[in-house]
Length: 231
Image 1 (cartoon, rainbow, N blue to C red):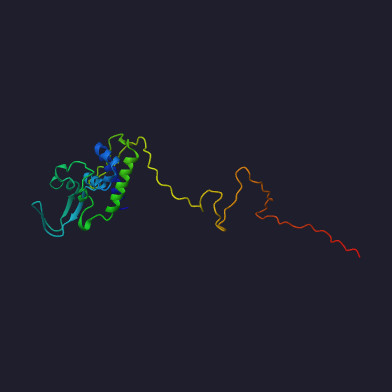
Image 2: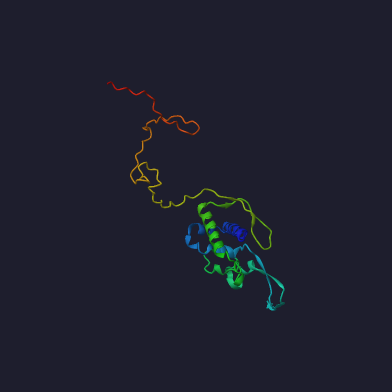
């Protein structure tokens, strides 16, 4: 499925990056205002897709090098995301409050822009922020190992200690549906009146006749001879 492995790598790479930067980890865990930029900054800092191939449609000069038409070019997206000529002196630093973090090229650009970019941002934001805030004592248990791939960069194994879980905020309770509640006095669906039920411990025993082959025996009247009238 397109986008599955890259999204998994986004969550793994981003979580590892935050664990290596305790100040940014604490900021994500306590400040919800960074939710709109944290996913893009994690994509920029450690992109799940490091390179992308393009075939030249016409002759072009790149960095003083003539590239003929039909030649295959491998673009380094990870290098562009940390180019100091564009990002400045903080290109190699992780900053979840970076205002222009969404200008990275991890999703490509132009007609080759990723179709699932919005979904990947949403999944990364929800997964990383909820993990950090749910487990504030999250730490690395061992140094992660990489998958050693050239294009799709990710962690092969990353073992962590979750620690204690934070208590989630109490969510507002949904209004009780009187038709589905366990109240014995709920209104009946057929009549709309309150049903009267026996309370526990005061139910009257009901005698039932045994069933044979799934059929209940019919009650038959005993035959009695008719009395003759006296003349």
